[in-house]
Amino acid sequence: MRDTLSGATPNLSDAENCLRNRNLACAEADYRSYLRKYPKDASSTAILANVLTQDGQHLDSIPYYQRAVALGVSTYDLYANYAVSLNNVGRWTKLLNKLRRVEACAVLGGRPWRTS
Image (tube, rainbow, N blue to C red; front, side, top):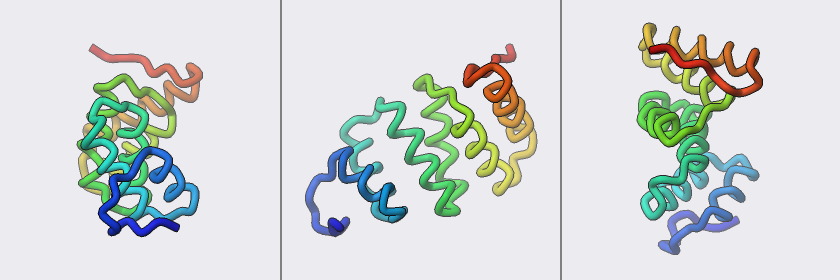
């Protein structure tokens, strides 16, 4: 396994390997580094948000969920994990909205409805 403190610039493959090995600290470091270079990568942004949630870093995950949604990510896993983090930091109004989107993703096959 690669040493995350080696100073080498990680690539997406490194981040995915860390995640596959369930090394959340390594995955977090590599995805953060990757996103500094490619900030508009929607999928990697969503994955980092989920990694942070899995690691219990709920408050830190929220801006990444917001960015992933703004970049067009709309999946059941994204909204479900987003709701977990919102619940853990006590943001109840936003939590209810995300739970509605989780339900919509499940019912509509991954395409959440929008409220205006």
